[in-house]
Image 1: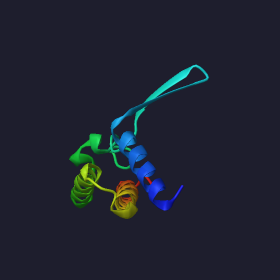
Image 2: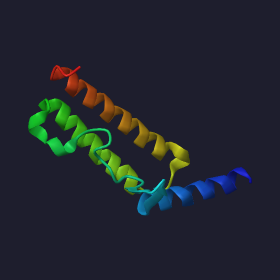
Image 3: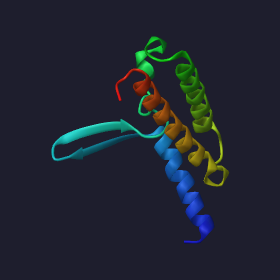
Image 4: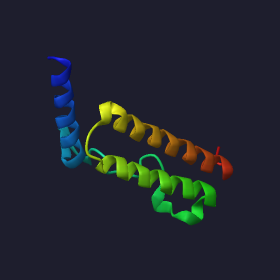
Length: 107
């Protein structure tokens, strides 16, 4: 397939992944998951609430979550840079989570 053809295919697959739930059954175990921007707690536990984190770490995490939401809702792929930016945000949220654990003496 030409480069253009792969790009169209990738956009279609990623678009479907962002909105369609996935159901998988393996060895009798059914797993349902929403693929895409659905699980915001995968990289940082927002459910714990602000009181469990240093105020600056919480503020940074919330702003990154807002940026991630905006990128997931953006139209267009921007030559793959949109997904790379989302990956970078996820990595930053992972680092903030580690910083919070370190500040709590959990690490």
